[in-house]
Each structure stands twice: as C-alpha cells, then as structure tokens.
Length: 389
Image 1 (tube, one colour):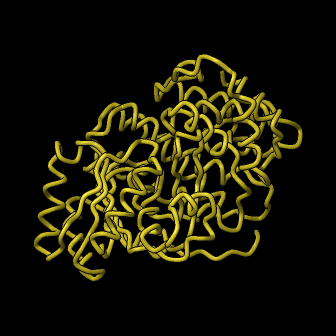
Image 2 (image 1 turned 60 degrees about the horizontal axis):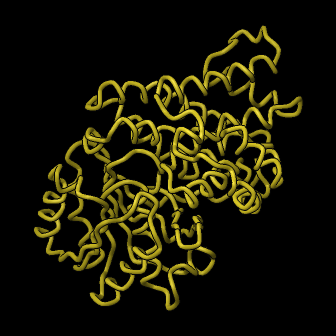
C-alpha cells in the first residue's frame, strides 16, 4: 500500500426529510445560486421544498436551470456569469452527478479570472471555489462527496474530468426517498456507474491494500444485491438507501487511496459521450466486460479470479483454476448488466452504428489512461471499442 492523504470534509445529512438541513447554508452567506437540470424537481415538489427552507433561512436565490445530462461548458459559463453579476456567496446543486459537476466548476469559475474551460483542461488552476452544497436525486457518480467534475465541449467533441480539493462539497443532503421516481434506465445506469468507479479502483497492481479491496468488494456486492430490487420496487427504501451510500463511497477515496492505479474505462467512455452523447452509465456497462475479456491473461487471471470469487461467489472452495473462475466472473458481470439490469449490451444498441471515429477516440483515450492496471495503447483501445461494437 502506498502513502496517501485521505480527506473527506463533506458533512452528510442522510435519511428522510433531511432537506431541512439546507438551513445550515446560512453559515456561508445569504445569496445562493440554485443549479438544477430539467423539470423533475419541480414536478416532484422538491423545488418548492428547497426554496421554502432557503427562504426561512434568509437566503435569496438566483437560478441556473437546464443543466444537461453531459453538462456543457456553455452552461458552466452562464453560471459563472450569474455568480459574478449577483455576487453569489455559495452554489447549491439539486439533482444528480451532472448537475453537481456543473455546479462545482461554476463555483470554481466564479473564483477564477479566466475562462472556466481552462479549469476543466487543467485542474491545477483551480485554487479556490465558492462553498458547494448538494441535494442528491440520483445515486451514481458520487459527486456529492468527491473532488471530481466532468464537463463537455460538444463543439470540439471533448469531455474531460477535472479535480481539486476545494470542489469537495461543504455539505450534501442524501435522502433516499428523492430517488424513488428515478427511471429504470437511470437506476440501471447509476448502478453501473458506481460499480465502474469501484472496479476502476479495485483492479490494481498495488499489493497489500486488503482494506481497500475489501471495501470495494462490499460496495460491488451491495450494488449487485440492491440494483435489481430498486428496478423491481422503485420505492424500496433499503434498496435506494444502500445504493445511495454505496455510490458515495465508491469514489470518495475510501477504495482508491493507497491502492488504485490510473483509470482506463472512464477515459474510453468519455470519448463515447463526447462524440455520441450517450448515457454515461450505459457506456461504462458496455465497455467494462469488453475490457476485462481483452486484458485477461496469465498475468491478470489471479485478480479477475478474486473478483469472481469474492464478488459473485464463484468457486468459494477454490477448487477451480483461476482462469476458469476469471472467465465465469466476467460472464456473471455481463449477465448482471445486460440481463438482470436490462441494459444495452453493445454500442449498436445505444445508437452507435459506425466505427469511423474509433481511431481518434482511441488516441485521446490512450492519453487519458496512462498508468492503468493493464497499460493500453491506442490500438488496444480501438480493439476494445471494436469488441464492444
């Protein structure tokens, strides 16, 4: 296990009716930028509840609505301008990971003299941010408790992640009941997203990180157990609560610090989203088994066999060869994603019908995944795209 610093400053209010704790935002000032996506928070009544709590706390609100599923830099720039014009004290994101990611870069952009896209391309330029608060409505990205944000510039077919400690939210409200109305598609995609975060950290060359590996396996088993329940029973509190808490811990450093290598599936999927604007979790689900099959070898079979045994319960008595167990574990993940969770099984199923962009996508993804568990060249990544096609 290598040396690390684990720092999660976010205060979490978890459970039913915890939106009332937004009154604590008053400690950061009296002017908030409210960031949200479509009209779902208005239809559910959450919008009115949030405004009522803020009003009672003496907090005035400026709104940035219409954040896209893959948040655009244009929307970020609009939010930054609203913050500057209104002398905003803090940013409140109400929604899922895309809304929170947008709010994070808005908060940083309000403290930066240049263009917000600079901060996306180079996270080292993020030196400060307005206080960030969140109300989570979708269990997936873990943005409510981490330092990361992903923003797209679709005019350039670019989607990049950035990060800084000051992007970690000051406080996040996690009420599982707010996810009851999430569609089957987004519930499945969110489950795949949190599992992908966990697996990106789990598959590592670093040895001796038993604690992180154990945490990762628990998170994966939790998602496998409760994802199907949430699909079948959308208002099952225990299912929604466990998925929500699993998503937060998948990416807040608990399973990565001291252990993880660079990620490779996410850079590959970011190219898919940048060029084709597909649902992030669906792209991850399609790519992950294809990547596993591509990198499975005598050198990696032990790690994949461990995954099969400890996550899916295959060969608990260790009677089978590691390679056989590894293949069964990958097959079990395919079955879970594409049959149990009813997700699209290949790129054609999400509307990608041609391969002409695979070369440029693979070249960019290779640059973004240097140092991953199994080093991948441009040609390797192109082959994985082909395999997932």
